Image (cartoon, rainbow, N blue to C red):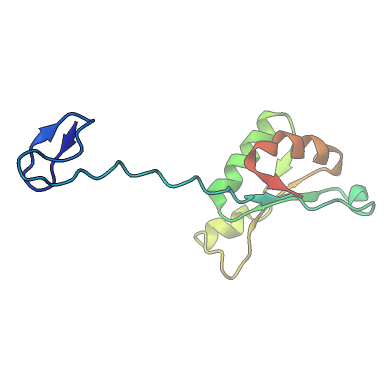
Length: 125
């Protein structure tokens, strides 16, 4: 049903003008086109030297809750992961401007599997 903006009377959807006061009905507004989603995370490529390390950074997250979600997903899939910045972020109350982002680290052997597991979070790299 369409409603006249002047008199408030209601008319069928196919009405073009209010028959009482001749106020034209506006066509329904088109919804805005969806915005392209920006990547949320970047997976840094691993060098040969990185593959020899005990732990490498898989992703960095802007907030502690975001990092917690990723950490949980990795652990649920059986991938050992850690969040070395968690204590600092808890102490600092999540202030990111001076301390950078929250890192998620894993063993290099799990890097490809973890990257595939998290591919639905619009990651690039």
